[in-house]
Amino acid sequence: MTPADLSRTVLHAVRRAVDEDALRAPVPARVRVERTRPGGSGDYACAVALQLAGPAALPALEVARILRERVAAEPGVGRVEITGPGFLSFTLDAPAESDRAVLAAVREQGLAYGHGGALGDEIHQLHHAREVRAAVTAQAVFRLLVAQGARGRITCEQAPDPDWVSLGVTVNAYGTPPTPLTEIRPVPAGATAGELLERLGPDAARWGLLRAAGHDRAALGPELLVQSEANPLFRVRYAHARARALTRGAAALGFTAEAAPYGESPAPYDRAARPLLDLIADHPGVLLAGARHRAPDRVARQLEAVAHAFFDFHDSCPPLPAGDEKPSAAHRARLAIAEAAGTVLAGGLSLLGIRAPEHL
Image 1 (cartoon, one colour):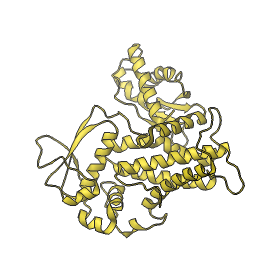
Image 2 (cartoon, one colour; image 1 turned 90 degrees about the horizontal axis):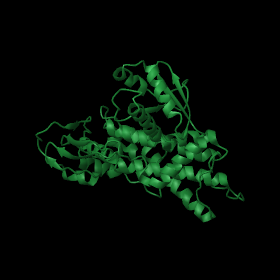
Image 3 (cartoon, one colour; image 1 turned 135 degrees about the horizontal axis):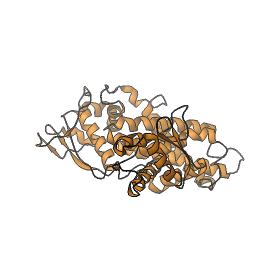
Image 4 (cartoon, rainbow, N blue to C red; image 1 turned 180 degrees about the vertical axis):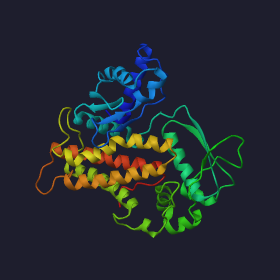
């Protein structure tokens, strides 16, 4: 069960409780679940009982008890506890089953892994100044919103800069629209699109413009072009290229990726694989948060974390056999995790408008 699956499961439990008249409160549009913080209980936690206590005119602990009995019976949920003033803490079924479900979702959805319909009822008009960072940020935010089912368009205060096209920016209209808008106004880049394209090229320029939070100044120096793992953009793209190279190497050795059967560990390396598997599972939530908060920088930081965890995993548990070693079930399972990481990296870069080369 992925975090998105768990969120839907809890929301379904709220609807059931309301339909059965066990809970008299408006059903929220969505329910947020988060990984349990250090020292907490279970795998995930949710504050929905505290959110509903007021409207339901019940203590939060009573609301939590009503929801716990409905969530605990759902497939994939191993245990539900009530902690503190009314938090629900969830322990999922055997990690191998949850991991397998995540890997299967990545394989099935490909670059669209993490896309969804959570914002399907929303229409947005993103309005920005005639400035390159604002234009690139608006385009990335628009991509994230569309990936979550929203609709909308982008407008600019003045006629767009022709060089924006090379950065993947489109503007539907310009001028002062008649209705209130969502304004995109990050700290200006301090350079024109033409200057950035000449110095950095489109991919490095976009990464530099999007990597920093909107209220911070963007780093747009020559370090973006350094071909070493000290450069986060290179590291992310290199991790993707390495994942694709592993697939080619496995094919040459006559085997393909295969997740471990239900009830079995993905391979005897759970400790090394855990951070990467967790980041892959968290990816849909990061994309949704990036869309809601108009924050493509969150996606960039997620990709950096995935790349870092990928190399740690790759070095600790090589997906390809070495020397006279024969391909085993462990290698096939490791390859499945590596391929999923590569897909997450490619999909995230695509939403930022950045190419993910298969060879570096």
